[in-house]
Image 1 (spheres, rainbow, N blue to C red):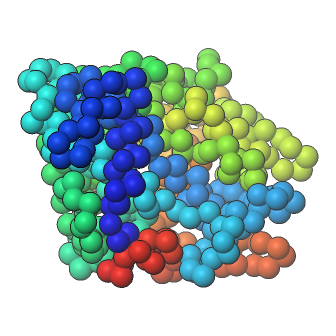
Image 2: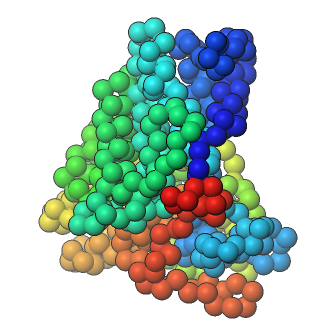
Image 3: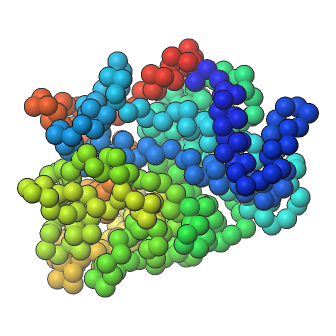
Length: 439
């Protein structure tokens, strides 16, 4: 990325201007400037609406999917499944870069200019709180795509991503360290916490950040930084406000549906229709379920010949970023890391009681009871594999846990991601590197 270009800036603000005559007035500086809370809500809505769709692409790098080689679209995704990040075929889909910084431009506009021009009101505070939260989320996603997994011993020297906090169309940015990016994420979340007004967002506009969504985000960030006390504290604060679980013995609504009782933030199109159409669930994934007693299986997968299609995504109904079950998983893992094994098991069993038939739950409970710390940690990761299949968690869990060896067969050839392979960190996209020599 050589510059946040004028093209991006104009595209960003002109998109925001739909239905707002004020944006058609050209100011003396030659900019199109929003002024009121109504104007800036539209800018923020544009930021949300253009948030990158990248989690489906990470799924192609995991052990969750196999790609259907019979389809024309196969060529768009095959090199991602081969972990080939450089010298790509021109048909290969790129992981997003400019889109992240385009959204970042909206947020910087709101934070830097909206804070000055909006009249003081609860609406102003909420808009600014959401902008800080979304900017934090953006850099959290970027550093977990393009930076090494967080390691407190090396984060200060590990390469992260460029941080842009100003509206400067001429800036040329070099990557900050992983630690610096996390520092910025945490600083933005702290700013958001001091501004956020809405406790929860109702279904339909729950793509917007709220106090409880911010707490969920803080819990995940602490988990990724291995800050177990903070992860536990934030997860429990979230569950105190939003602790409902979807009982799959009594409802047919998938827990990752935006209208599920579990939905906390429904922003990400985590498994988009393009990847859904060109893929099947891997046997590594489907074999992890008890198809008789695990109620998730029929909600997540559908038989298609000898294979299974994933049906828990593909439409906007399945936008999901944070949901209640994740908070119980974070609570359980944090308790385990704090040597509170019995409590860790109790936390996770609250979720599993709502996922298995009564007989299946009794069996799982009997399996868990004798587990030691190591065995239960492995069980948590396996249950995360099952629970959050194709929601964008798996690649990140693999990165922060064991970085295991994965083999994909593409066009009859085995491609191998070795354990602890450097390709567990995705390269900056070629288009970004061509435009910025500092990358």
